Length: 437
Image (cartoon, rainbow, N blue to C red):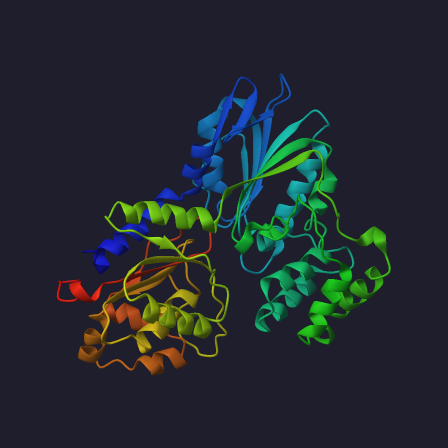
């Protein structure tokens, strides 16, 4: 019978299997001047080497895979990421940028990418590696807007709990490199290998779509800021630019995909969940992926999951997505740890449930954990240590709470992001006498 340690080990195996390097090597190969992505082949111009460009949290791991697949075919590489460079290649230029707020390094990265794209001719070919985090890592504000003003606008949107879709809409419309605008700087042909960190895998949303297109408008950006009562708070330059752009089609983002640039999805939350399903099947379970995605406030998600457990009674269930949490305390933690703590607060005492919630990027909120895991014996430990669950919840200090219980999941940064995973194992009534810790 599955126990808490078994499930923790499965989670670590899941992270290993969805490593960006592994995903690319499973799906991509280079052969006879053709680049293959699964069953599809892309012709590479003869006698031409390939330019590798990219940005996002997973860019180094993705690039490492390409170097192993086709190093002798690579002309040079320019990458912008969030971590220290462990990929030492003579032809590689790497810019370590910042996240979640853009900085001078973000502008440096954007300008370097623009310069590189401009240098490519019509018969050149590039592979762009795109993953989560790009929205902050690469930025070039509109000429009328300073970086400091862009930063203030971004911070205001984050602080006022604007949905990420609305935040990206605004960022695209005050940027020179988002919403398909980066594609305007090149005549070269290319393919974008994409790791999705958004539900539904909408290419317009992933990394703010630097090379795709954007169906949102300046009017949408204007309306979003007003809806959340932020418009009058953003810098005057942003207000003026948006008002001016409302009546200018020339300033609008591209509304159709470039015919020369193809996007291919190589990683997503659905892929993460299917990897989890395959690994749990090896534990002699019959795991079920629940279609309904997690995308609401943590408290609502918790309530729904408790009701789900009450109705199901037994089985192994996998959920994907990303909850939101409106932090008001001063503690340490994140949406996943807070979800587990909320579940523990209402844990069905007559049931035998193992509950795991964690982030695929290895980092949850402002902590060094990716999530937490509990089972029926966790409440006993809480009583022994005389911990007040509600007090920790109120202060949003779930990390400290689970650290005291030694029930944090701490795989470290995975340099990846395919959203979050929740795994629930409900032991059946007939097995509740089994040892399950």
